Amino acid sequence: MQGGMERLNLHIYQGLCTQYEVLLIGPSGAKAFVDGSKHVQTNPPLPVWRFLMGSFWQTCRLIQQRRPAFIFAGSGVAALPAVLAGGLFGVPILTYLHGLDIIAPNFLYQKIFLPAICRSQGWLVNSRNTRRLAINAGMPAEKIEILNPGTDLPDCSDFDGGKGFRERIKAGTRPILLSVGRLTRRKGLVEFIKYALPQIVLSKPDILLVVIGSEPVQSVARHSKGISKSLVTISEQLGLKENIIFLGNVDDRTLSEAFLASQLHVFPVIDFPR
Image 1 (cartoon, rainbow, N blue to C red):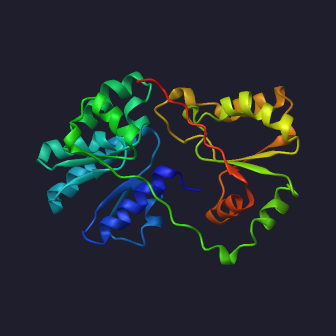
Image 2: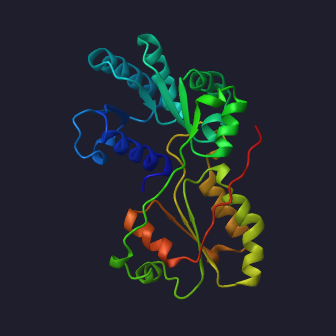
């Protein structure tokens, strides 16, 4: 399963390709998602320093060879090599930001990456809240535009309403709460299981929380590490083991089936102070 940020960047890439010739630099595996484009260069995502250095040199070479009109950085991390290369050759940078791209509680990130982000010539942000955070970080309000993420609704004619999914996870007719996304501290799933789920179980003893997603492979937020273990530990300590299923990453079809089978999507995001 791709994460939301990867899906968003893929859709932005596809949209740009309808009007421009787009040269893509991304992590290993990106070629599988861009319809065999010849203009794709990749770098291993780990270690991060290797990805950043590879992206910087590849961007410099592409600028020299093709002279792009602008460089689009799909995240705060990607902004660093983009801004460095763009600054060397006078190419403007447009950076897309989520909230965590601005407030990531990591000392080196705040001292190195955030200043690079602020040196972009323009910014797209995913929400009004992220725009507020960007302005507070020193980015000019008149150069920030909101581009809300969207989604395509699946064609449900080829599905069974989630019955097959329920059978595979042995849910029967139990009501399902669904959590989808990377397991990070900011998503608030630990707090939901610790403080909200016990009260829900008292009212609905047969409720089932289905968790889809895993910890990020790389993260500037160190406190996101170990979330999976914490979720399992807390569920066992509170006697909720029979009310939670952890599925990890799943394919797109299984994800659609999970949404069809569930009654409520749980997304308890924590508002970290800036």
